[in-house]
Length: 162
Image (cartoon, rainbow, N blue to C red):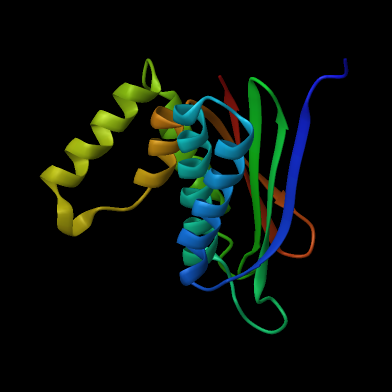
């Protein structure tokens, strides 16, 4: 028997209402196929966080009104990719790489998550963001990376294993 492979590849309009719609749709899709409800919830959470970041930080001018979502893999391994346009004058890729790099300085994702929560609790008015990505690393058991791609776009990738 061939290994079970799956793929979702969508162009998603950059509207806030789509965050929950996409997260719920991904969750329901995987719950219908896989018995591991906890794993399905993790995939949906990571998808939701990356979709929210795409909408929040995307550069939505001109023809750029949607972003690309891909969820693919096979039993035991899932990759979630979100690709969105960025402002060529302020691409924020270094900031994003710095956030992902800050996760790596901790012994594990749980320690990074706890540190981010303490940062927020200690200085809520100066919180610089990144909680969603740290949450993906910890609760979603994800390895995160970012790629700058041509035509002023960025791709954030979360690789999950179960």
